[in-house]
Length: 400
Ligand code: ATP
Image 1 (cartoon, helix red, strand yellow):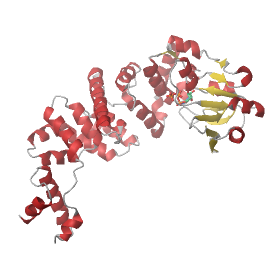
Image 2 (cartoon, rainbow, N blue to C red; image 1 turned 90 degrees about the horizontal axis):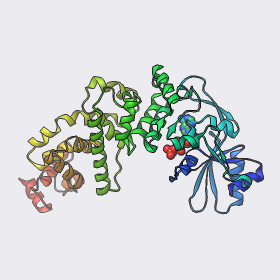
Image 3 (cartoon, protein in one colour; image 1 turned 135 degrees about the vertical axis):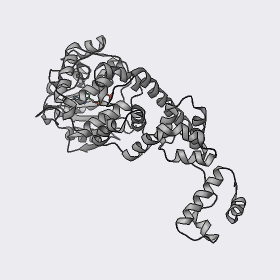
Image 4 (cartoon, rainbow, N blue to C red; image 1 turned 120 degrees about the vertical axis):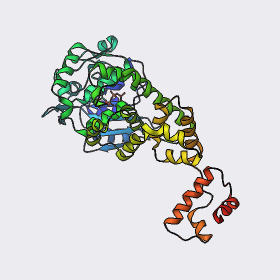
């Protein structure tokens, strides 16, 4: 339908990018991107007027729009554009262009194909750089020799594609990667852009496999400021992912900061001097928690082993973030006592309902202030240690 409407407007439209690639790979494409050789706003307005139940959001700043039909099916539309990079790793200057120009600004040949949506030559393929053959050969190829210098995020995008689709970097692109690394290109990339790509990488289900490629492409320094034993690290990250799966099964409603957990595992054996730089450079959310976890983790098995009462163990876990607790379970897979106590904490102790709250304690005659907080904590400890079980035993405990 969008092709018919675009034809009436005299505006050629194409399905582009990952959706075309995924179609040839016979994979499900979650996002459908449409390139428009003309005005996006007029097109989405016409779609809304002509297709019942259709609506759109137009983003004036980027000249892009999202079109949805009544079943929730959606398309992302963007005007075809030309990009010019004023300096290596800088953001590009952009102006409207045609489909040929829109394809050449893309990262890899496999992502630079377009399918026409015009009803007269519907689904005819535009593949000026041989993306289809590269897909068949499993080759990731940039479109020109300055591609990685213009935008080094493409290197990490490439690493994700190579991991996901088991592809290899084409020889000339490998050469370009080496040149870009010699130029220290990542040092020119803004910390925010680099961090976003690092997060995508850390969140990959295939992160352990990506690690081999990171090492092969001489990029391991991006994730870890010191060399590592790749096999041991892959096993550790794999165990971290198993803990995430366990958590998701136990608590489907809880979300976990996967990137934080993976960073903890990648950095757990490093010195503070080593990790200070990435810590200072990257906009890591909740950096203080991450630092606290990294300080607690090395000594955790000894502290847990020495803690006799359940409340003592729960208080140790309480000082860790959720990512830190899962990291501990991954780091010490043979420490049964540590794992059991971590699971008990997450499954029961963390969400323990207090027998009395602050107001109830005041109603019993205790005055507000720091000592009330202290009593609440001791009540909770007693509850964890099963010294008290209900309001009656708690009152007797309070009197004592
Ligand atoms: P995924 O399945 O991971 O979403 P995708 O190829 O659809 O893969 P997007 O990030 O959604 O990835 O990007 C859509 C398209 O935009 C890409 O296929 C590519 O053609 C182009 N693209 C995205 N980022 C860049 C970039 N940094 N440089 C050049 N082209 C890019």
